[in-house]
Image (cartoon, rainbow, N blue to C red; front, side):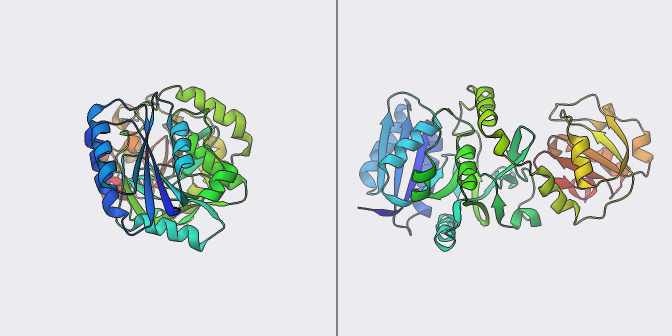
Length: 363
């Protein structure tokens, strides 16, 4: 018997996470005509499998399928789709916990807008309620989760919009579109798979869409615990096959934010990033600057400005523009920014974030 929605879940988890995920999911999906398809990706945790087998007996619309050996995210999800009977497919990781009503919002979005081929919600870190993902942002041979680390109340986060590609950690796709454009590329093991699928949906004329009012909490790292497995290899494969089709949209997202804040003349640029493309990005952003200085402690997750900048930078009134891989790499410098006390300073990063440290770290 056909269903409206098939929820596809590949897993290889310990019992506590799986127990939390299943019990939470059962409580937020009961208003939809749906099925839950669980695909064991070679899971050998006895307690996890015993628990799911028991829940399969108790829940009419829950089904378990087992792969004897670990095959990876793509293969496991493709198996789940083959077993599915739903008109729409929701792919969800076992470390994602949707809020009540969020799955219905994704479904209604696809029903109402047939031009949308894939939709994801706002993913937040449960630890600090900040953004984990609003879709992907691309720069030269790199991709990141857009607005990662931002507050969920900020305008850029609260605005639903098109994306080039999405994360399938919490993503809904009409089965008809998945069948015609997919499946997941089984070359990939545990990375780039969902991004490539949704990018291909976009390249085939459908919209990939971020739906801001749909919220789920993503306790990252619990599902794809083997994500480092040949990750560099997968990255090279992705960009060798699709690199020329990916648009560099980092400037687009940064410019949207820069246009809404007062830009000063003659910034002094402090480069805390490993990449060498920032001169081009600054030119495209039309940000005027007179000096460009590289710090020594690049490629660290915790940059100490006292160790890298002289006292002159604390007292000079020239506005500073910090370039960093992620703005949180400067988050341990609250005292430094308090002493400097300059609301005109800006930080931009590869996640499409443009923030003013005076308001972010101080106010």
